[in-house]
Length: 307
Image (cartoon, rainbow, N blue to C red; front, side):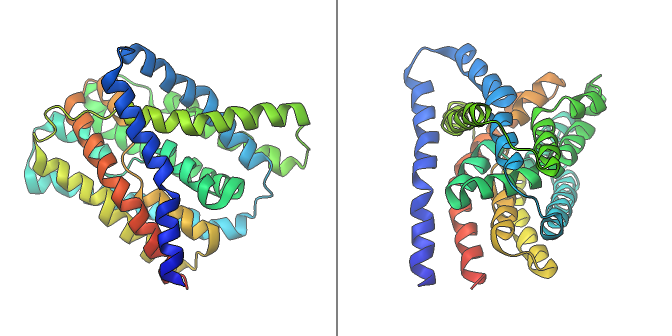
């Protein structure tokens, strides 16, 4: 029975990965250009995804006692991944600009893919649980990423965190949930439809952002960062979650969060802060392709050991 459920889980993820592939093909064989895809990414990031997070969390009665072990797991997992990523500087002794840019690829995660899969696994309850987890660790990941790039930038870290739409949507959803107020039906339908649109569009945008050109350059460092993200980080999450007694939907969500490939926004941050954008684009591509294998494998393993 566990084997059959594991196979069903792997098959469940095929449509999401197919959308990523479709996005890659659309970008490859159309002349829509980066202007189109860049605009779509902004719409998703600033409007559609926040709507999905807000409505999913606001409609859910949050049990912070049940969520606390998962939140602790996520924070410790990110800190371990940061420490392992920093070891890469000592092992490979890379160019300073390259390392500062790629450091973030070892622990930042693609929330587009995560929210899509959370919804497929557990519906709105899964999206809400995933949203609570990432609402806590997104600021931590952003701090780590900006810290590494800080010497090349004049960015205001506090301002970036305060204006992060995913953090604002999560906080707003939590506060609305705690208020006990009902969401008016027209508003609920509007936000739900916006959220549904964000899932498909987000996966298409992930595929469109893949860059296969010169992906073999600097492979040693890229492979190291990818191994930290897709192997070490899930292992850490599973071990810590089991030690803290995380179960059910929260166990699935912390494993999913840890197994996700690097966020495509890592490239945007690197370019904006004067980093090595090409190196980050190559890392994101390798991580995303590897994540298509890592996610079902880690989720399957998580399901098997939870029996």
